Amino acid sequence: MPYLPPRWPRYVEFAPSVLVAGGLVWDAFSPADYWGDPMLTAASVMAGALFSLRHTLAIGIAIVGGVFALTVKDGTAGGLVGYLEIVNTLFAALMGVGVNRVVARHGRHLDVVRTVAEAAQRAVLPAPPERVGPLAIAARYQAAQSEARIGGDAYAVQRTPFGVRLLIADVRGKGLGAVSAVSVLLGAFREAAEEEPDLPTLADRMERALLRESENTSEEDRLEGFITALICEVLPGATALRLLNCGHPAPYLCHGDEVRALEAAEPGLPLGMGTLGVERTRPADRPFPVGSTLLLVTDGVTEARDRSGRFYDPAAQLADHGPFRGPQDVIDRLVRDVEHWTGGPRDDDMAVLALTRQPEGRIRIPYRGSNPDH
Image 1 (cartoon, rainbow, N blue to C red):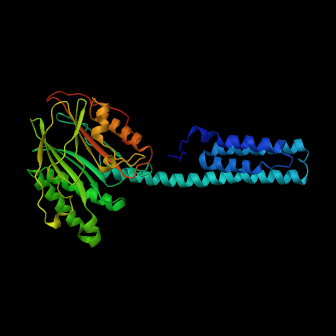
Image 2: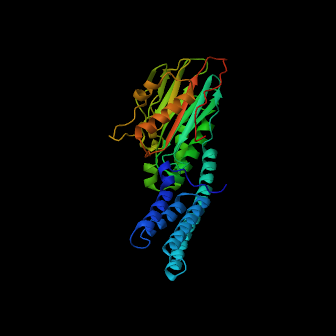
Image 3: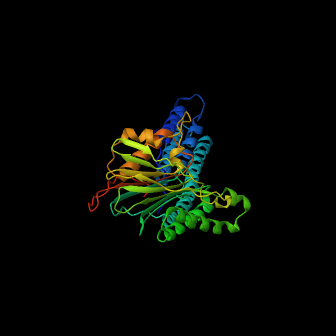
């Protein structure tokens, strides 16, 4: 796919044309010859940096044509001054084309990198099924920077003999090291979730897999390379769920207009810190009635700050948006609300997983809202 320049605010689109008009008017009415030339050069370079080659050429042609008309008006078209002015103007137009080609080349390189990153993200973190039994499911991974498509947040949904099991996790750090840890974590979860009868044993299996993976890393990386995780189990045939919190932000239960955090009585240590010898906490059972939505998030949500430094609180903020029409509706409103809260770029990636419990045997198509990342 050819490189396409990004869409800029509307006032930016008019800036080169305004500079061209301003430069030519200045040249036409100023007492000295061609004092508006810096504005014309700026217009050419700006067009080359911001817009397509066709737009850049159009700006260059307008500049050259306008300056040529001024040399004819001033009677310098056939003299040395006129020739030099046309040459200078052509050079400015070529500068704009050159800048455009450099930006386009780097844009194509960025497209390749982003394509590889997106493929890796889909391989490591595939989208969960839209429905598992009575659960309608939706998920969103949103990087802190729009250029990034890969990071250390993870989620998984798996049907097992013990019920539907869920995982959401946040790896400390970013880059390839975090992606490698996510791959090990999800692989261990998918295997152990089918075999281990309880959540603490499942967490222990994941812990051992992470410790094996870290054997070849430095001592500092082993001490600091922990993973916060929340493991959930929706019990079959019951309106309840079981939660094991390993140092992760609490999940939220959305039911009607009410949104409340399901805080753990004793949050456990993150995964990767088992060498400290601390006994793992016991899971807690919580109600999960029909029609309610379980919302699991990473700290990219709970640590989002507004301009005054206040943290975003999903329980307080989302309550004004209910009731919700399904898991995708919850995620769409949450993402929009976080973006409005921060008013700009976030400092951390954000992963969100939502599940709505529907009546057994009833098939309902999940709500489909806007989802630019999937």
